[in-house]
Image (cartoon, rainbow, N blue to C red; front, side):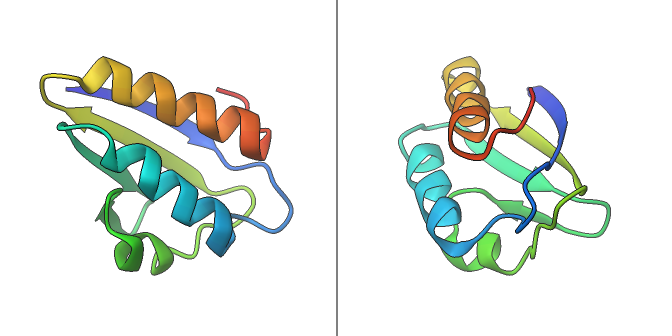
Length: 89
């Protein structure tokens, strides 16, 4: 299992379009991928779960991946967050 903590640094937080794109990225991998905040942990492949997180600017987000392609999943998800949202990783 690999884990990485990041702080969301986009004024509007995670909006529906980037969330949907993130779900697509996570869904490409066989590994289990989760995102969690202090109060909630959801499957990153679930659009409904991801939308329910209400991730806001300044939130600490933990990304975890476990499985045969966990490193690739983690790299691509962190790359997505950095490229699309300007989140420092």
